[in-house]
Length: 201
Image 1 (cartoon, one colour):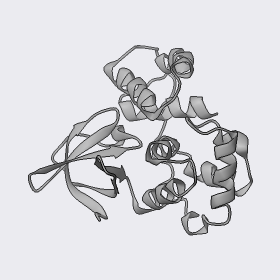
Image 2 (cartoon, one colour):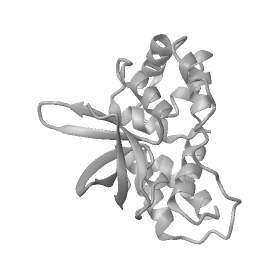
Image 3 (cartoon, helix red, strand yellow):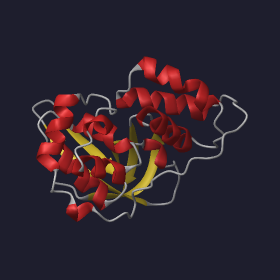
Image 4 (cartoon, helix red, strand yellow):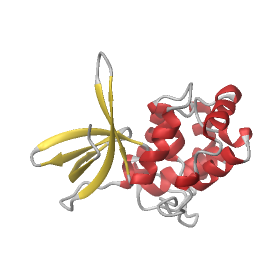
């Protein structure tokens, strides 16, 4: 089982990144691929390997704590890796853990694929089991910019594709698109962060 990969990012898509480790390219599904950039600077990506009869899939995380939170989420009945990634894509991990601690089901049901029953199961299974992840370090993964002139860019298009890949409903994404067009950002990461904030507020 892999713990992490250390190499250079060679591709970034709405659903995954490709990381080159000594000439071998690993396709890694991540909650927010656009936190990474293609380049020659080595990065460390913590990974979880899921093995089934038909596939072996790698899921990647920015740090150890994010991986541990993912592992806790996929142990909840009704939460699979894709749903867990969609939950982790929201940068407010502290808010997520607080919602679990306080039985805030309405907060949890804002995530794609999480209904009231699943939200209740998350609380039931994880309440009291998140103390080892209480550190605020690495929770604020994105920094939104100030609203700007509303121009459309390839970066915004990539962010919208990423929201779709995470499982958010097309109608919900369409509803927030005008606000994203008014949002000043220079990269997909910022657009995606703002989109997630709007979808879960």
